[in-house]
Length: 414
Ligand SMILES: *Cc1c(COP(=O)(O)O)cnc(C)c1O
Image (cartoon, rainbow, N blue to C red; front, side, top):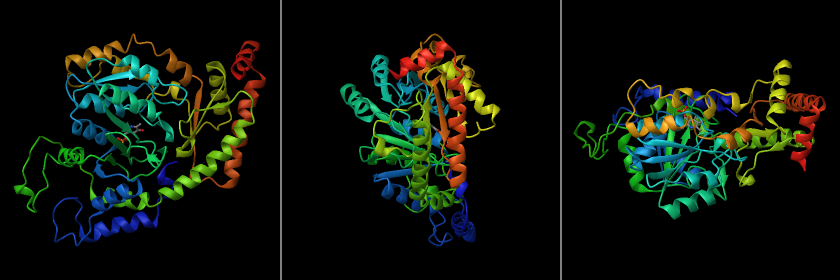
């Protein structure tokens, strides 16, 4: 899954190109940089490979989300609908532009449940932000239909799903804008970085200025450029872009390794009655970064987690229900409004409401889900060992399950 497993000569070569001139900044210094523009090159490569009109690199996936929201004109008083299962960056970005995060349930696709989205619509809703979690996609046809019916903006958080697609279109290129992350544990890494993707020239132009203090980037004298609006500094450096460029060229090989390992593991677990898999709206578009599977009940899931920990095979597996960073249950800092600087009053009201909101539908899904990260560097032996370790732990738990748990298991099979 993470590109850092395959860091090598290719990355070093690109970085050395930049070091050879010492021009570490992506803008300006035209003569001194001797034609080396790694950020531009990576942006072009993203557009070509992902079949997208425009790409704007940023300093992180989080700043890509912030940039995209700002470029879409989302701010004070606007509500952004997002799922209860995502990385904290999703609500951080919404709060950072002054907007209100509205959290909705996820279903067994591990992405936002369209029924819950419809229920969450209010006159203040401006944007729907599906998060394509764990390498696979939200149900985009239905989400796009809701956006059309209610004239809402669509921002896709594809930070975990580079290279995955839905009905032939790459995730992140379907909505008004989409984001990618290249942080250290993502499929493509450059240490820290991200990108906003869009097919809309105005949105792109907004991103271009917003990430660089509002610079309009017209002319060739940086100091004399105009500032049509206020921006911030979310620039990527040439060193980071250089690593990203080498990594991005490896995307196809990463995807094919992931697919092979994922399909093998899945076939092994599929032999166990009681184990089910995540719903994938377009299975052909899965990027296979994770295999996400379900036990018949929360009790049995917890038992499998304990069994795997006891066998010291839990590393690389995630029980998100108990995770501090990816699920609403443990986001106490959000729910109790723990910020260093004051949020606006709409935001304070919204985050406090999360304490009493019913997330039982998400709990039902997340309480039974384990995601297995798919390694890129596993050998054949290691892959087989992973599969048999998982299967043994699961079977042991199912065999010793209480009569009630076994009843639930049968009910879920029926
Ligand atoms: C990683 C991630 C981000 C943020 O990316 P960073 O580059 O770490 O800031 C945003 N959303 C999701 C779903 C992510 O997994």
